[in-house]
Image (cartoon, rainbow, N blue to C red; front, side, top):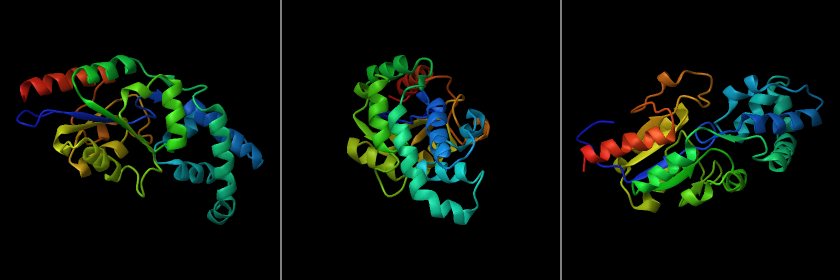
Amino acid sequence: MKSGAAAIRAAIIDLDGTMLHTVPDFELALNGMRAEFGLAPITQQIIEPMVGKGSEKLIRDVLARDFDTDRIDAVFNDAMAAYQRHYLAINGERATLYPHVIEGLQALKDLGLRLACVTNKPVAFTQPLLAKKGLTPYFELVYGGDSFPRKKPDPMPLLQVCRDFDVEPARVVAIGDSSNDAEAARAAGCFVLSVPYGYNHGKPVQSINSDGIVGSLLEAAELISAHNKANS
């Protein structure tokens, strides 16, 4: 994060791969859906690179392992309904918090930052998952992949957060694990911090155009604190 820039007043934080390791939940839900179509189960290693671009893309990518485009189109609505049914039944059952997430969120709050969670996960999955993992109290705003006509990497959800908070984008940092988060933040005019442990579509975190790689949300809070002191 560069000197001579505005102090940070708000943070927009991603969910899957940033705060929670959710691929084990995806494994249960997706394989439950696949079983209904007579398809063999797939592994977390196969699923992980597919995560992060929304449920529609995830379902199409998973089905594309066995079906051609016409077949995917024919079964898509049924497959999506099956996936949603299975996911809602197990949401948060196997998902785990990454290290220092709670401490990091508290540290960000202690800096006086306003916090929003913006994810491409449908909001009907997001709200109960945040509640189950004790994350709800930290966020003033929560937006999912179906909250707006466009999702990340489009800047629309991030720009809405800036409007809701009445904070200019140059005073907002987006924290995420993938190029989706970074592209959305860059287009919105926000700072970007990336964590190295999540799901970046199978690509190294170093390939993300960000303002820094932080090992945890707590490390992000420490970096933002130093930035704000230097730019107050």
